[in-house]
Amino acid sequence: MTEPLPSLMVPTASWLRSTTHYRWLDHQGLRLLDFAKPSRMKLGFGPLDDDGDLSEGAQPDATLTARHTHVYAIASMRGLPGCLPLAEHGVTALREGFHDARHGGWFEAKPSSSDTSPRKQNYLHTFVVLAASSATVANIRGAADLLTEALAIWEGRFWSEDEGVFRESFAADWTDEENYRGANSNMHAVETCMAVADALDAPEWRNRALRIAERFIHQLARANAYAVREHFDCEWTYLPDFNRDRPTDELRPCGLTPGHFVEWAHLLLKLEAALLRTEGHAPNWLLEDAIGLFEAGIHAGWSRNGTGGLLYTVDDTLAPIVENKPHWCQAEALTAAAALLKRTGHTRYETWYRRIWDFIDLHMIDRRRGGWIQELDAANRSSARVYAGKADLYHAWQATLTPLLPLSPAFAVAVAKQSG
Image 1 (cartoon, one colour):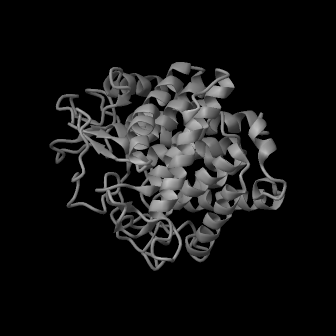
Image 2 (tube, rainbow, N blue to C red):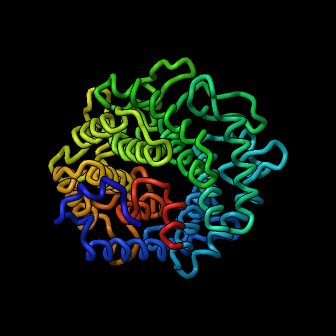
Image 3 (cartoon, helix red, strand yellow):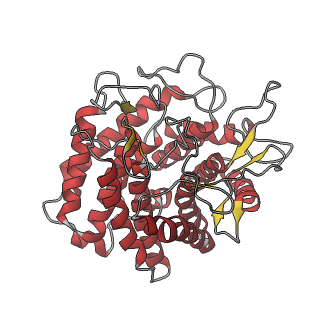
């Protein structure tokens, strides 16, 4: 599939025009897909250890299951053996295993008698909808029904029309709404909204993505020099001390996350492309803010101690909190660089795209045991301070696929059009 006008601006010598680089990306993506296949469990998918075996005491995980379903559904459309059965397995697990038959919605783990107060998180439901959307495009059995139900829950329970964002969490029976508005789960919701809009030809979801971006980025982050604040209460009061005692929390660490600055950057560019493709116009601030976010993320997070890589968190003054370098931060940074290169043709982004891939290649791609090392410490040694083992497939694999596709439509529809 060819990119529209932006592809004409990519320099002739760019890696994004290199057949050899495309083959390398494909090869790395295939390695990741194969490495993650042993994560299949009786119910869904579970976390892998550093060697690619199920972690000791591994339990099925709903977010992992949704992400793996999304990935393997798309991979199945590329003609890759073994991926369709894994996508089907994921859809079945989400429909039958993690689902709350009494109140509707999904739990992170299959409920047991010892679970006294499981909560229903927007973060998880965002990925359930994304998985169902991609699986529907791939014509996976049961996916369309899953998408219908998941969308009804996501829209009916989590979407706040007045605020233009998604609510964060509820008790199992949908009472006790959490007094929190989170940038992380809403950022992923932007991706999912765009995927649903393309899968169902439903522009209202694209407009919701724009409303989320406008609040968290154009209003809040832009006023803070594009340093994205993560934590707010329901009255939109910033919570600077949120999770101060949990600096290595996997989803809501205290402080600011430069990896999210750059992740927002490429999502804004994809949203701009989607609006231009479908509506013929898009707000100018989407490009302006994407550039600002990338620059802010690189400034705040890249090579703060001279060893390369994007660190995990900084405080409000941009002083490092956790200097470890998760793999997903690097993946999102290079995805943003690729998107900006496609959109602007500026050689600065070619330089960053190459620099970030060089860092990943030399420090994170594990050629001995497979997969990507999920986290490095400040000296680029393997670490498990935040993320143990090699559970994640989603971020790394999408980083190998994004450069091969246009900014719009979303992954599943883009691959379906390419394959067709």
